[in-house]
Image (cartoon, rainbow, N blue to C red; front, side, top):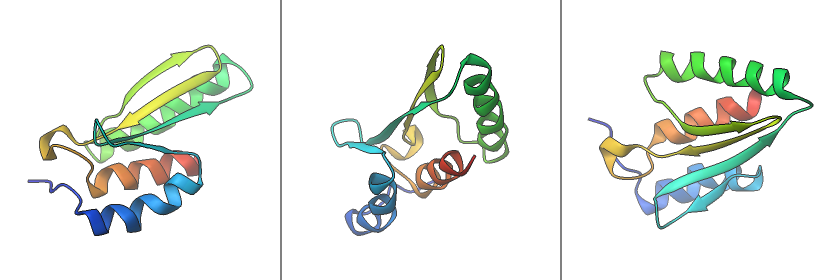
Length: 96
């Protein structure tokens, strides 16, 4: 079972993500970010790469795509909030 992050762990793991453009939605216990690309093909290519990692780690984002923008929300429903997997996938998405 995946565990929800403690307050201390949230501060440690989320700090660098918040500095890199992620937002913490405390009401939903989630993190969110909008990624902007040159065009639709670039956005879709990025989503494809991210989807491969999400599938590999069995941790799937809530996301939407509108032309050159992809809005991502990460939370771990089974844990009832943020888990280490959310931070891990967010870091991977930032590196793609």
